[in-house]
Image (cartoon, rainbow over all chains, first blue to last red; front, side):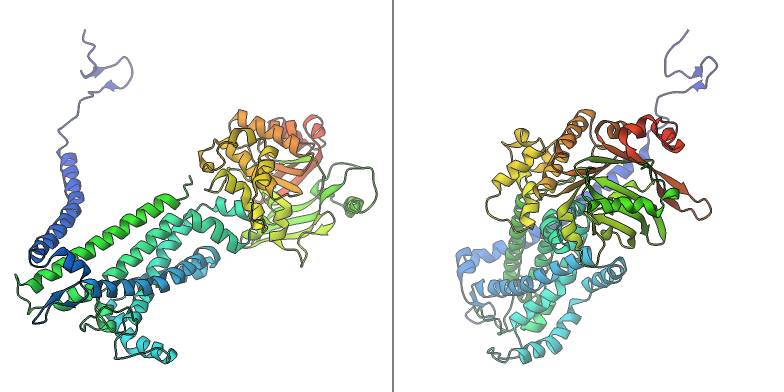
Length: 319
Length: 286
């Protein structure tokens, strides 16, 4: 008598004994696994593609201009008859935008997040949060126009003691970008703070902490990794923002200057204003776009690495 | 005078005992006096008409089935209920004769005097040291808090286990250690009362035993009120025990907690006056 477990048959009195082997090859499962693998790989491929497409023309560029000259030169004049490729003026332009954007967006965004997460009633939060998320998606060209038409004159009016010249200002561009990223910083920080367990808040209240002390000494430190992530997202957007900067700071010839009242170019504004139809491939100007793009990529990468270090150092782990 | 207070017999003369707070008396002083206390969440009456006196430097346990309002009542003793929108307390909650819900009373100040330890250990995600120093720092004590931290950790019978790793994150400790850290944290504020809301329900029996020993030690200095699901725990540590039950109204779906019986723990567990108490402590109900 066979006692093999895989042989179908009838057990004594119970349900019939069934085979333990797979009924078929389960092809569907294999296909799904392959499709999911392909989609996951796609983003890696795209990123790699971007890096390569930035690097190849950059190599061409650096065969004609030394890296040293590029990184330390103080005159950026690629279109001139006697061209100069010192990238510092437009790097300073970008950093100025980032500086003013951080100055505006970090305190205001964090304060909004504390309000939303710790102070606002359910009803207020339910109203404000979707509005914030809509603001995040506003086309930046519209915000740029608003800033050029309304914000620039307003800021000039309020600060007559500053040496304003011309219609453009890199400082106002930075402030505008700051306003632009407040919703992002606020919304992501708010999510991070709301994921802090209520039991931690209760613990602090039970020791006689005020609402503000609970927010500042317990909730913000516990949510710090999410809050830093919000800042990084915001700063990345500030570095990459092109349209607002083109409209508000102008696309004029950049000069190495730390004066926020003057118009100048940023790295993205240079790329945006140069990469137009009348530029021919293979020229050094064409290649310079990619060199600036590669530098931009490296700067963002460095900032992300720095942020990850910060998060690791200051993260408060709870479970 | 009867030691039993049932809601239905909470006659005005029972609250005469509140006057003992001011009178010179040989009986133990009361830390809390509750007179006809109702606690609401919005329109829902969560706890109905509780009158009782909680004596100084003793352990008082609140027991009863889920939903009987014992935690709700506990939270009204340090105004933690204020944090819940719509929560409201009626009647008198007196702390050493002072109305805890009086217009000039500051809930933040109340909680520095009446501390609380919660069901699940909730240390802050900071170092052991910073957890204990948190309260003193809130009170503006900066500078060197080593002595304060050591004293509080010794008070919570934790010092010897953690003295070499004060800078380590509190989440590296065991659950029982975390709960004793929370007790140390509460002690460091130098409160008069420690409220404990099922402090051992997330702990193993060994850790539970240590916390119970600690409670008995702590009552020399503090008044302790504990909510517990564990009747043996109440029997082991509490001097007085209050049994609550829940009255469910099937038509409105509302559930209201009421105080059934409040007496010396030995009486509650050996010869309670109320049949419902006897059924509960003997395990026939709840």
